[in-house]
Structure formats: structure tokens, C-alpha cells
Length: 538
Image (cartoon, rainbow, N blue to C red; front, side, top):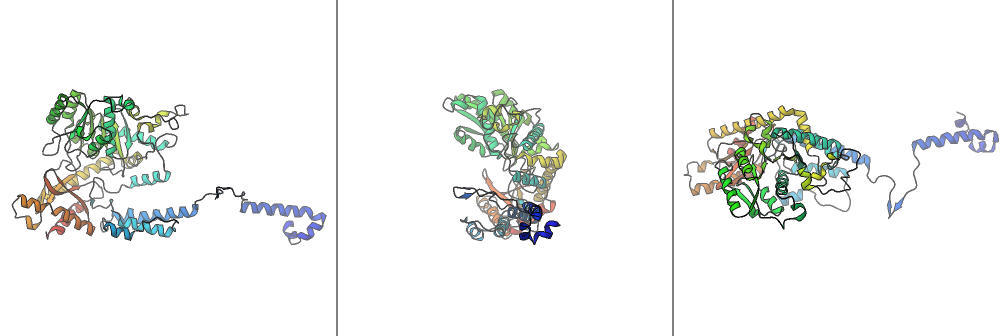
């Protein structure tokens, strides 16, 4: 009060010695209150022409942009893109799309409202893989729990090479791997999540080679005999890629004949192994497939395991697609004998919808074989004198350094649904597949290639103009043009998305795969109705 009363008489206060203490009190409080309102700034530091005081980023503006972008994603992707009344895609040819999108990067940044418009355009012209009528690949649909897990990991931006930088996600990965190994039928083992089933297959091939000849890690390929591996003619193309990448050579991949359903014939495998040995080569690996890409076939694992044990060969099972049947008590019989495998590739981002990418390699050996094979002992990451248990630093089991916490997506889904919920997801998908098969049998103009074993339903649509034609060369030549033409029409209309392919002498046919729990019986009916509508005039 005294300070405020004499403030207007500051000049007088200075000249009156008896009142100078009040001036001091006034100035003290005035300066103090100002310092609380606007903190004093340090003198600017300039280095190489750059001012280093304060952050470069406009934090408030950035937070607002994230908030608005998340709202856009919720409205346009989570809500709108899963609506059957919306298009699966808004098709544009490449050059037209290039003009519609502002893709050019410029010297100066652009305002947030323009960036949000770009985000909206990206969503608009992208394929909505979470749409109930997207059937094009071996993944589809939206799992809400996995999506939230992805939001968390993207925001936290971790890398799972050491416990100190990724404690939660490494523990979650350990728990998920343990449960997956239980599903396979192992009481113990090892494993690691990788960026794709193709990489898991390559890991397994290299691991099998290291087990066969540990010296290769230091001495390389020069001292090795000619290594031979065996897989079926229906295997995933990644087996050839892995053989090429690892220096084994694609000519040393022996393809074993399959039966009419696409399953490896064990007797043919035995013949090929015997022949390779007679040639003086060194067989070291057999890769069986549980759930082939096109036909969804499951190789006879018990019979193949008998052969591998007899010849001392590593058995790898590529269950990238079919591995999810292991969570179903009703359908796990498809993988009978998988517990005898030395390694298994399994992709939860497929049937179990953990979100791309989520791919595990499981290894029955628990003697640190993965680490022995891949470790480079980087001392700046994997110091052995850390203050915690360094066995949790799993990065030395990987060929990667930085590694995404992919297991966390599956962990969150598994926590939300439980094992019984995952089982129900598989059972329902296969029940819907069965429903579609029976509908195809009833409808004129539709023809199955074969009774499916899994969720792959392969069929032809025969338009009215071909229904009375004899099934000769001319018929099959004309039929081969039907699926591509219908695919073009459905893409441009945006009503659904379905893949087609020729396969081993069979002309182009549709391959329908049921995965998403958002898919209903009505969607199966719509699929057949729409194909008929789009192809009726052919």
C-alpha cells in the first residue's frame, strides 16, 4: 500500500532520505513480480550463424497439428473407411493421381492447413484395407487394439535392441514369443520378431546353415561344400530370394512336387534328398509350408519330420499364413506335427490382424543359437557390465540394429481378446469361408478349382457367353480374360477388391480370402452378386 501510494511521487522519494526505504520496497516487489511473469532470458548464443537459445520447433503449433490430424484419422479412416457404403478405393491412374496430389517438396515449409488437406487427400486416394470388402491380400480389416498399440509405439518411437531404451516392449515381446511357442507345442525355445515373413524365412535358412557349418560365420562361403535345400513347388517365393541373398544360389533350391491339393509329397522329398547325396552335394534344410499363398495348402509335417530326422536335416515350417490356426482347437489339426520343427515363421498380422508388420521367427533350440549366429558384440550397445541383467538386451540376436516393437501390437490384441477371442476370430473366418464355398456351388456361372482346406477360396466366374461352350482350348483362352476384366471394373467402381492369378496350368481365377471379423455373411453374398453384375455382359 505504501509502495503504491508513493509510486507517483518516485522523483520526490529520491530527494527525501526518510522515504528512500519505501522506494526500495516498491522496486523490490515490482521487479520480483515482473520476474515471475516474464523470466529473464539469457543472452543469445550464436554458433555458425545459428541461434541456439530455445527449441527450433513451435511446440504449440505442432501439438495442435497432431490433435487435428488424429481427429481426421478417426473420422476418415477408423469410422468412414470401414463403412460398406463407402468405396474400397477411389481409383486413379498414376499420372492422373500425380496431378491430383501435391507431391512436390519445396525449399520452404507449408502451412498446417495445407498439410491437413494433403492428409485428407492421402486417405481419399489410398486403398482402404480395413474396408469389409477388401479381400485382395492375406491381410485385411481393422483391429482397434492393435491400432492403439501402433499409435503408442509411433508416438514413443522406441527401438528394441536393449532393455535400457525399450524395457516395456522387450518384456512384451518375450511374453508373446513364449505364448506363441506354447501354441506350437514347445515348452522352451527362442525367437525374435522380424520385418516380414520373407525375412523370417531368410533368418531360418541362415540359422540352419550356421548349425550345419558354424565356421561359415568367420570363414565365409569359400570352404563350404555345395549346399542344397528342399521346399515344395508351392512354397513362397522368399525361399528363392533368401537362397540368392545368402549366396547359396537359386539353382541349389530343389523344388519337391506337390499333389493335386498343393501339398508336398513326402516320397518325392525322400527321392530328391537321396539324389542330392548321390551327386556329392550337402543337403542341410527342408522348408515345409503351412498355408500356401494361393491354394492355402498344408504340407504333411509329421511325414516330412520323419525324413528330416532320418537324414539329419533342419526342418523349417513357413506358417506365415497358416500359423494362426494354432490358436484354434478345432483347426490346429491342419498343422499336426509342427512341434517337431526346428524353426517356424508365423505372421500374426495376417489372420489375427495384428497390423502390418508383425512377424515372428520361433526357434526350438534354446542354447542361444540365434545369438551365436547373429551376434556382432557391439560394445557401444551391448556392454556386459551394465547394472541390470543383460540377457534382456536381445538386439544381438537380430541382423538389424534398430528394430520396431512389432510384438506389442499382437500383445495388445491378445490382452484385449484373450486366447479364446483369438480362437473365435479364426473359427469365424473359416466358417465364413465354408459359407462362401457352399454359395459358389449353388450359383450358376461360378466354379470352384477345388475344395479349400483353409480360408483360400479359388474359383472361376464363367460369364453367360461361355456357359454353353465346351471346355477346350478356346474356352480356357477366353475364360483367362474374364477375371482381369472384372478386376478392372471393380477397382474403377470401388465396390470391392479381390485378387486373381493363373496357377500351374490353370487360367486366371479369383482367390478370395476371409480374414476380417468385420466381414459378414452379407459381404459374402455381395461378393458373388457384384462379380455377376460386373461380368454378366461378357
